[in-house]
Image 1 (cartoon, rainbow, N blue to C red):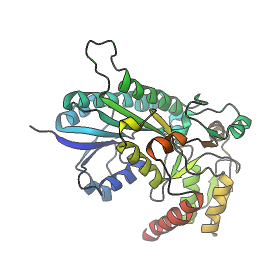
Image 2: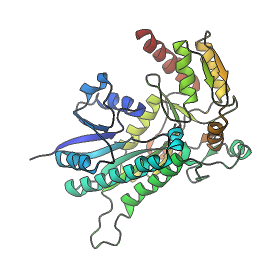
Image 3: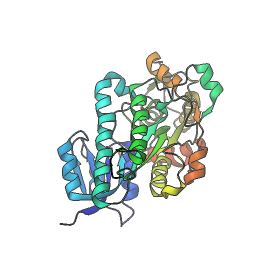
Image 4: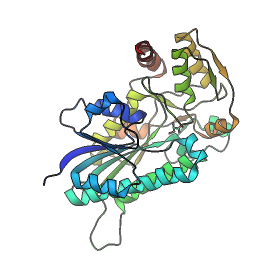
Length: 341
Ligand code: SER
């Protein structure tokens, strides 16, 4: 029996999966299978070859996929985000770390069985950074990949460790065995800034204040922003996030000088986001009700990231800066979305 070659997306029903499936479906040579606890939204269902409904913690499910499909490329998106993880740290560790280990092992087995390296795309996060104080955060400005890697959240710890696991599988896996087994997994990590999609709303993240504010304004619902107006972290429009994943997935290994890359686009304060949102939706009511605990998480995240390596090694170049993200993507697409409902 011949196994069919496919791209595997875990956590496919989430925000990134949504955009990624849509983009991949435009390429007739690519077949996609998905693994998620939740079914895909109905419009996405016809765009994939098969949906596996289940958990990345289910070894039997992974064995089934291994038996049926030949996978050369994995987008491992399944995770519990930062706010949710603080309420259930052990569950977060299970899903974010054990789940990722399972997927890396799945990739290793795939590579061993078909003989080619499996590209493993892993979305990491600015949550892996931990700036010691607000003063230091403002002084540091754009942080590099190797600076301030002392996360303060369970999610950040999980993501940072899994970046290392990916590097381990790629370069050192079972290094004492007689035969060389490493090199079967080609792990590539992107540390994403907060992502803002015009089509979906996030849940369980700490950067959610920006997309929540914009979507609430568009729906005509009042919004109480849970951070101070001066709060600043990097953000990116979802299409640029998807582009970055696809670009990094396609580039040849020789061009990559590191396993983990920052990517940036714009880094507005919450007040600046509020201003452009109100300009687009003047009827909106946006107030501030600071959640000091979630605020503290954001105060440890960098004000911006240095993405020089991503630009140099694989041509990261976001299409949307702050103004374009709002004018050309968020506002028109969100208007359409809620006009349809
Ligand atoms: N945006 C995510 C969160 O807020 C971080 O990756 O949890």
